[in-house]
Amino acid sequence: MTAVEVRDLRVTLGGAAVLAGVDLTVEAGEWVTIIGPNGAGKSTLLRAIGGLVPSTGSIALFGTPAARLPRRQRARTVAAVMQSPVVPPGMAVFDYVLLGRTPYVPPLGRESSADLAAVGEVLTRLDLDRFAGRLLDTLSGGERQRVFLARALVQGAGLLLLDEPGTALDIGHQQDVLELVDQLRRDAGLTVLATMHDLAIAGEYADRMVLLAGGTVVASGAPVDVLTEELLATHYRARVRVVHSEHGPLVVPVRSTRR
Image 1 (cartoon, one colour):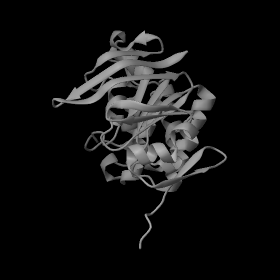
Image 2 (cartoon, rainbow, N blue to C red):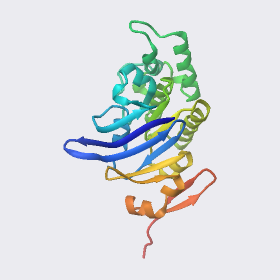
Image 3 (spheres, helix red, strand yellow):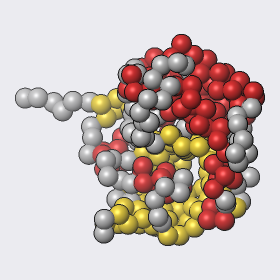
Image 4 (cartoon, rainbow, N blue to C red):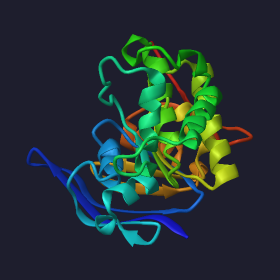
């Protein structure tokens, strides 16, 4: 089944065209990573798919036009972790993550014991259980990033949108988060659509990669076909060396020669 099908997607913000006719398909259970230089439209693409910015063109989620999905049904279908989400003041970590279960709570009802158990399980898997009673705004940037992911995971949606999931995370927790997401993808059939700046590890997790530049798709395919020295030099204006590893290509920056 196709999880995401985007056709001729266009987004204009502040009078400027950010996305200029993007086509994208993501199959159920697949991990697709979107890369591209600053201003390419990566985050806007995710926000449009998540229904967070107005767009033209068509977006279908698991075979249903996104515009036809009621809000609660859409929340059960798509979970998103965007950059710099609003942090509610005075809210404890457990309560914030529990908000991810809202689509399953009946109107005027309360969370069930199963909802509470789901939150506890996700907090444990993300090494956050010891922070359950802490106020969210007292955590470090990396700790908050894991809490944002926990809220999205506890939502139980089939599609997970991740906008720069490694933001503010040290390399150890970055690996923990990506490995957990990949495990859920393999064990539960989760579909992942992510944006990543860190090309050093982006190719190790994606089944496919999409390179955006100037609001359009300029390359798409297996990581080995997209993470090439030629494409990165052209669209990032970067000097890099691509090293092929067991799990995918690794991108290493190379300094220019000094005289």
